[in-house]
Every structure is written in C-alpha cells, then in structure tokens.
Image 1 (spheres, rainbow, N blue to C red):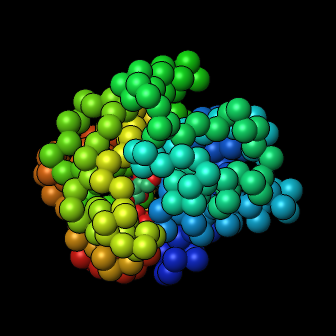
Image 2 (tube, rainbow, N blue to C red):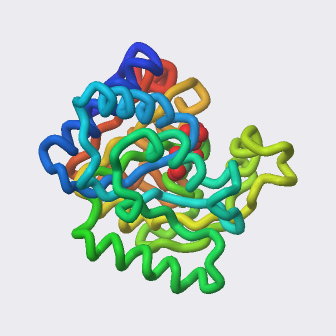
Length: 242
Ligand code: F6R
C-alpha cells in the first residue's frame, strides 16, 4: 500500500489526475471505475485540462461509476449521471456508450444490478478504481456493516451519509435514502485502487481504514487486503497518521 500525502487539495487532485492519466496512457482502452462527490472534482478538472492540452485521450476508455441515487433520473441535477456529464464527460472525448452509471430508476432493480456486474465482467474487469471515502468509512455506498462479498445492489443509506449528502439538496428530507452501489467485491477485484481523501472530517475514517482491523463496520478497511492500492491524502485527512 502506498500512502501519498499532498500539501493541499490542489496537489492531491493533480497527483490523482496524473495517476489516472498514466493508466490511460499505458492502456488506452482501459476500464476506469469512477467516484462522484466533492473529493474528485479537482481531479476531473485537472483531467479536463490535460485533455485540452492534448496530454490525455479518453477515446477508447470505458468507465463504470460506483453508484447512483435510487429514484433520481439522469436529468435530475442531483443525480450522479448529471454530475458525471457536467463535471467530466461533456468536456472530454469519451464515447458515451462506453460510460456506465447504475440505473436508479429501473423497474427491475435486481436485474439492472445483475446486468451492471455482467457488463463489468464483459469488459474484463476494472483496471483502476478511483474511490472517495465517507466520514463513516463507506466506499461507493457500501455502508458500515456491509457484506464484503456483495455485488452491485440497492442500499439503504445510513443517517450520517444522508446528513453528509444533504448539503447538495434543499433539505435532509429531500435527500435520497437509498442508492444503487457497486459491491465491495467488484471494487476489490479491480486491478488497482486509488483512494482519495481531503479535509479533517475524513481523518478518523482514514485512520480506521489504514490502521484498524479489517471489519464490515469500516467498509473501506477491506482495501488493506488489496495488493495494489494508492492512498492519496491532503495533510488534513492524513492528520492522525502523522
Ligand atoms: C460517490 C461515492 C462515495 C463518496 C463519499 C465521499 O460516488 O462513491 O463513497 O466518495 O461519500 O464523498 P465526498 O467526496 O463528497 O466527501
């Protein structure tokens, strides 16, 4: 496990983008796993900048997002589909048919989840999975007490996650309480993991993830078993490690 500590959010984002772009340069038709939320916004901005400077080419890349809110359609400004389009896909040369986000509106959620797993398998699995982390240690929306062998599934979000996410909605009441999330299994089966965290609010989750025992109460702790993990932090998130 490599732990890299950047001075600030900008340096963290630049390094994250460099790692993702190296993967794309080494294997132009690679499969990326992608996260949403506040943490990777700077990384997406930097990847767009690299693309504009002709230093990155996403034309053959395939992507699978970690999660989507249950019950929000793609046009909803709070959906992760909308987030990915506005913050990344609209600004690069990725082919839309190569981008995948769990379907939060499907009439048959179990079937949609099964197809999502199948599509990942058909593409040969994920080469590089970019992860954020919840203040409660979730990865994707695999909440505490998660099943480590779960596949893509519908999850009930925990109180603290709904609270954390409510900053993007008008109120906590409007914040979705369910989501579709890639399971821990597909995440750890990815060939490389890149976990990003910034800000003091993540320090405790990072400490438990890296130094604690591997347990379902801290879903991210499972990454300790992975042979190829890079943890990229700003110094605030790394505070308890120093
Ligand atoms: C989002 C995701 C979540 C977030 C986590 C941190 O796709 O998978 O696990 O990475 O909730 O969110 P931010 O970055 O907003 O603190």
